[in-house]
Image 1: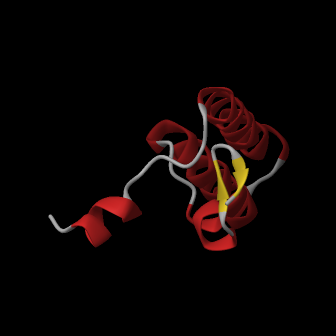
Image 2: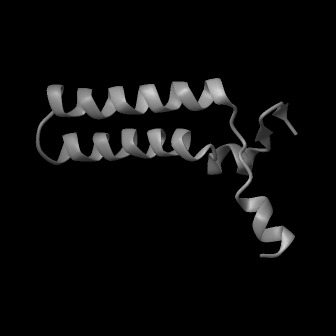
Length: 74
């Protein structure tokens, strides 16, 4: 892999931020199926799952695009 490709996969959120994203993502998924129904529940759950996935991977594309890294704005 080239260095440009490697930079895309660098973690840009820290450990506490990852844990919060995983917990909130799981809570959104659970709440979606408890309080919502049908397609709305699935769409909200998909958003929560995506949020949790960024926590599991440690990489947030939106943070990368806005220049926010582990130490703040870079």
